[in-house]
Structure formats: structure tokens, C-alpha cells
Image (cartoon, rainbow, N blue to C red):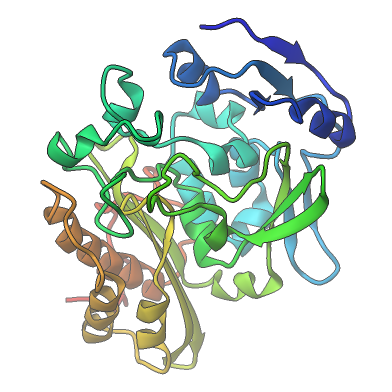
Length: 352
């Protein structure tokens, strides 16, 4: 690990000023950043510890019905907040399916947005990786890439974004609140993470010195609370990163779907919102045929990036399964293993 300065501001303004120095990085729980530093992948010259800034750790119901979650709210705290879990159950399920209880107790919402890919070539400093060293190449293109992207990838990078939390947040039109040297601004989470293109080292639209203050779920997102699920396929039935995941939410008008929300994880360098699939479901009666059409639309632009063609069919099936579970209704209690594809579909679900 290289030598670095350590700064502990007590206000947002002090943090922004401290992070204005080139090579500075914000430190929250450090569950990802410290590992990157130990491996020589990240080499910040200054760590700006934001854990002592008041006001970043609140969960607030705002007057307009939206919910604001401070960047320093711990994943476990958010998942176990009764009011939040009732309004946004797919988000709670995603949180509880990610990492171990120890990590959820430490990891933060803002840090979750900023976590790095788990591509093995990114973590291997002996490998070529444009994301880590721009212009060096991408060894994953011709390497072991069965876990890599099938949507939005480029010849420069085929890595995927690892977050569980971000998948339902993207589906529910979450807004990211930022503050930096040029003041405050808001960015839809769907636009916060960037696709690789020719500049995969530019992971997000966050500007130098900007700090994530909070994320905000709109009041309309609660309309999906009665029919909302998160589903995750992983290499082992434990706290592993997703091979493919899906968040699904349905707002019903009698027997028909009034609105739908679908997003995929593990398939691209960012959480992938499936708006064409959502449109397929509007006005439909929940059922296998409607869900298959939606799944086909969700993966319409998918192409293998190597030895991962199976991911396309897997993602289609996970979309169908997530919609089946959502149409059956949000359970009163989450399953013992949240987001498991092996959880039974409750009686009355539309499936075959």
C-alpha cells in the first residue's frame, strides 16, 4: 500500500475542499476501497474520511412522499427499517441478499453506488485492463469471461457492475444527490454509472471533488410495494455476487398491469433498466405469455462478449421468474435466503 494523507472533515464543505486535491478519494466504510488499496489497484494520495460528518446517516420521509437516504446509512440499517422495507421491499430484499451480515453492518449506501467491478483482470495488476490502466488493453476479451457483460459492452471493457442495491434503485427511478466545488446537483441513478465505450476508466458521471449526499426514491415508487421482488442467481447459494439478477415491480389496476418496473444486474457495466420490457406489460393480464414477451424485450440488444452466451437465456428466465414472484404479491416476510431463485412461488402466482 502506498503512503497517503488522511483527513477527517466534520462538514460537507470541509470534505469537498479536502477532496479538491488531485488523487484524493472519499472513505466511508472502506469495504471495497481498502481492498483495492491493499492490492495496489487504487493508489489515492489522500483519504478523506467522511464518517464523522453529521447529517449523512438519516432515512427521511419527505413531505412530497419521497424517501431520502443519506449516503452514510448502513446497508443493514436500511434493510431492517420497517417503514422503508414496507414501502420498497425489493430494495430491502436486494440489500439482504448482498454480502454477509458483518459487511452489511459496515457498508454504506453511497459506497455501494461507487463499488468497483469484480472482474478478475481488473484485480490482477499483471493483466491488461483499460479500466485500471487506460490504453493497456482488455485481457478479459480473450480470457475467462463467462461472468462478463452481455449488454452495453465495448472492445475496451466487458466488466459488469456488482451491486445488488443499485438494481431495484434504478428500476424505481432513484435520484442521486451530489455536492461539489460547483454546488449541488441531482442525477438520475440510471445515468450515474457510465457504459465503457472507449473510456472505461470513467466509471460514473461524478465530478472531481463531488461527494454523494444521498439517494432519493420518488413517492411513485411505493406504488409497486404490493407486487415487488428481487431475484439473484449466484455461483453458490450464499452471499456471492450475482451472475444475473433482476428487480421486478408491478402496479395493478384490477386484473391488469397498470405500470411495471424491471432492471437487471450482472449483465452490464451499470444496472440495466429494461424500459422496453416494462412497456410490453402495460395493460396486460399477468401470465406466462406476457412475461415471456417482456423478457424477450429486456434482452433484445444482448450479445455475448465471449464465453457467456448462456447469460442471455439465463437473464430471460430470471426476468420471467422475478415477474412471476412479483405478480404473486410481495410476501409478508422475506424468505430465509432473500432473492433466492429456489424460493417457492406462492399459491395464485401466474406461472406454468
